[in-house]
Image (cartoon, rainbow, N blue to C red; front, side, top):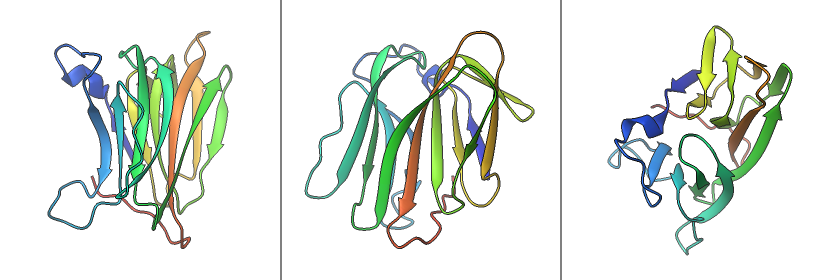
Length: 162
């Protein structure tokens, strides 16, 4: 499944430096199942606590200036990493079918199939379709993407229902 979230920061009238923006979380509502992970754009790195582990990446873009992509997760069940992809040319990113990827477009614009994905947009890829993500920059501006990669320790498929 592919889910395109159009410029989550645009939903805020004025993006303050200390504003936290939740891009995605599991579960998507507190009453459905136990918390497993969340991805947020914030002004500070996420601290680790007894209840959760965290990975953070400082970036600049997505219509927010300097900020952190923070992933908090239950380390007993979930693995998490954040990578940065910079694309000058068309590229194909390969995602294991069991992993869930959340891509936050920090700079530039690209075609993802028939869709144009711009700075500030986020895309969630999960399940077995698509496992190969083809991106083609629209112009000469490099495309910078923060890619959150989530999986399960036991190797089973990590699914998400928005």
